[in-house]
Image (cartoon, rainbow, N blue to C red; front, side):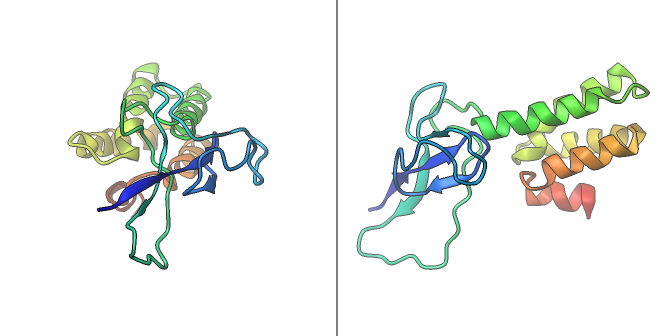
Length: 156
């Protein structure tokens, strides 16, 4: 029977360690503080899955998006959503009603949920009405964290 190691991840989402809590205080990639616990419920962040006696070679580890205990987004996901919302707000020509619809779709574009197809439809309907710099910026912000289904549906 296996178990999850405890990870250390910076608040920007860079993995410092996928198998050691409190591996380092600050990220060597961006200088931000690292965490090993959910900032909401203080549960350990799940790292790599370890099965004693079984060698796992060549598996990558992506930091989780949401806490497995309380369901809240980790800081790196909150920051992505906040940045996308801030960029969207810069478009003075896009009606506020459209901004709200797109903003509400962001969380379901990151993680596949039953609401993801609706979020994709909203994004595809309203985002083309945004300024090109907003469209390009939001794509750049979301692309690395969007689910594969969303990437194929929206950006091909």
